[in-house]
Length: 301
Image (cartoon, rainbow, N blue to C red; front, side, top):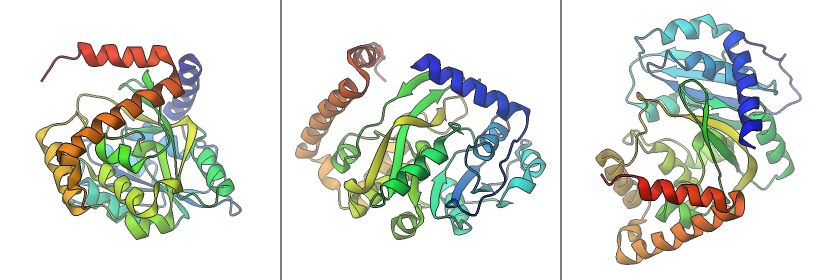
């Protein structure tokens, strides 16, 4: 499976590096709005833009909000601005602020968020829209995702599993915002990003939707929809003190402080076992064994 995915991604990225191949707009398809927050990602921004524009789906508007890049990213945006629905550059208050600005300009029925160093898989948007068309009760659709390096090589495939508010609250992510799409009405009920959060706005955003919309409104697709890039300059680098502090803020404002009690730590252990069960179910014994070996061999901080 990894070899097949690697081949698909390599072929897609080779197109991204050549030129845009944008499909003619179709008024018969539901419009999808993708917001891309950006700050100094000149090494990756063009590939990210192309991964949206080269989708096998035509009714897409791409909105880019730049926080004042000085590394050449603006020149790349200008190079492709005729394909963009909207873009702007000005100093902002962080990624959450940029996302809020972007979604204020979104006019689609379905929303997505792609970081300026990440990628969509070639059929991600078509698959997501098709799923939401068929499952009309669902509000959010998400899939597996690939972790890639700075050269677009696949490091590993990450398996998502059915959304659980308890799992997400007590034990953490089991999906990725770069491999997720949601309906416009959901966004404007629950989705405005908290500008006080600079590292965990995705966690807060998904948790609030889960708590208020209900976990049954989430739909999982058993395929990768996005690629999350690992590189030295990225903001996400594990549970540093800022992330831990923001998680406490999120728990407090959502009345979820129980997670920091003795009962909460017990729930975390329960959901950790549930995670292992899901990995067995989705990926098999070998995948779980590799995960456990990596965990055991990882040096303590």
